Image 1: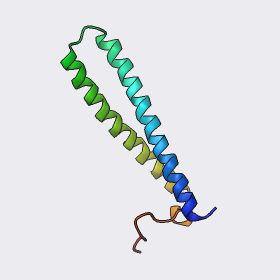
Image 2 (image 1 turned 90 degrees about the horizontal axis):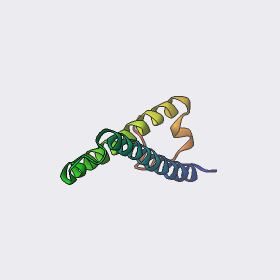
Image 3 (image 1 turned 135 degrees about the vertical axis):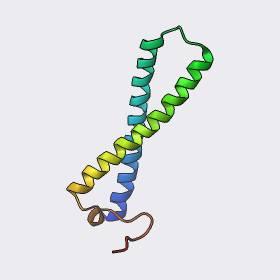
Length: 91
């Protein structure tokens, strides 16, 4: 496999990973909110909490992605296997 194919597969895999992590955080957050509040919450408050949970799940997925990428970049040399997407790094 060449660098461009590796880069394409990595981007696709990272996107799927981010979406799955975001969905897991959303489901866990909804389960937690449901356990805490149950049916005793107003419609307006539910919308605010859902919006807040959505933002937290995006931030959490990004944070976990950043952590995983740092761990991977310590193990392997990224420039050796992946083609730069935005241009070459200046040394």
